[in-house]
Image (cartoon, rainbow, N blue to C red; front, top):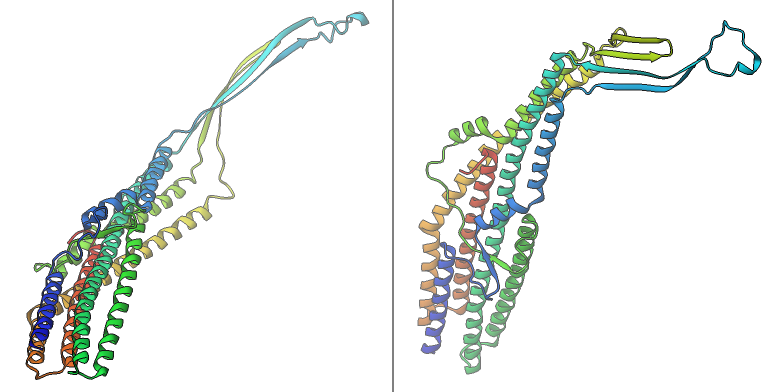
Amino acid sequence: MRVTDSKLFFCASAALMAVLACSMGAPAMAASKSEQLTYQIDDVIDLALERNPAVKGAVGLIEQSRGIQIRAGAYPNPTIHGNTGYGILRDANTIVPEAETTRAREHLTEVNGTIGQPFEWPGKRSARKKAAAAGLAGANAGFQETQITLVSDVKIAFFDLLLAQRDLELARQNLVIVEDVRRIVKSRVRLGEAPQFEAIKAEVEVLKANQVVTRSENTVRVNRVILDTITAGALGVNYMVTGDFQRFPRDLSLSTLIKRMLGGHPAIERGVRQVEQADRTVEFERQARVPDVTVSGSYFREIGREAYWAGFSVPTPVWYQRQGEIQSAFGDKRRGEAELLRIRNELLKAVNQHYQEASTTAHLIEVFEEGLMKQAQEALRIAQFSFQQGASSLLEVLDAQRVQRQILLDYVQAQFELSVALARLERAVGGSL
């Protein structure tokens, strides 16, 4: 009996030390197969920035804005119009025989051509170019915003998978301990030292532990697919992630984060540029009330006549002076201003919320590391020693082990929540902390 109890104590202690090492920052799981790839968080971020379609879409928007800028700076093309044909001059005052009435007295190839060059009002051209420049600046800010959002999504998905791997490791460690306990209980029941009911309880504990392992394995597979989708299939289906959860920076200040967000967040910059573009569009529509002038020159050569003409044409805005376009552009500007205010308020709310979440969770982690984990470990040690001495039952050891495992799960969950809060805080601030 002493040998059996010592075996239980040794197995439980070894499993506990392995779980603690896992939870305190050791890599979650080693590759079980030589061909299984392992990625760190920076590797996944690089793959996502390279292959994710959202980044490519933002790049396409920049190229589109550059094309609009080129078009805004282009000059209007001239219009050329020309005609030619065969002309015959007939002398209507001369009486000729009827047989000669169809005969031409004189013939010539006639030509006429006109070229017209429109000249745009300088104020309209300037406003259009400024609006296009603001649109390009907004597209660049949108590209930076897309990158920041994507990095945050990658980190959250990465930590989801890392948490699932840690949970799976803890579940497997718990299964090993429970199976050892089941073997000890069966041995005692066989020797008549324990009732049959304890063997049934031990078997139920093993079944529960197996179910937890199965659920954890499924969670790992699902989170692998999610992270692989963000990288557009660059990771594959058989891979692992390694690393640790983030720690709360000691010098993190809420006022500094808010100031940084208001001064340089790409979403705010994009909103400012959209308002500027709308304002330039209002100016363009107002300047467009001045009509463009088209200067033209013509040449005519006909039988018995050659002429050079010069002229111009000006549309006269008498009945309609673009009141609808001006009102529409002004409304778009107001909408952009409201959207900019909404973005600022949402980011301000997000910075405050995620900062408080991160700081609160960081304090909770300190409580785990400074007290709860040590107490749970000590409680399990005492329960194992008492069981070895015959002063406590098997169920008391299982309860102590269950409590200790739950504390480890809560500790890992707190680490995950802190990492997610910091990732979302980075998104709200507009860059790495």
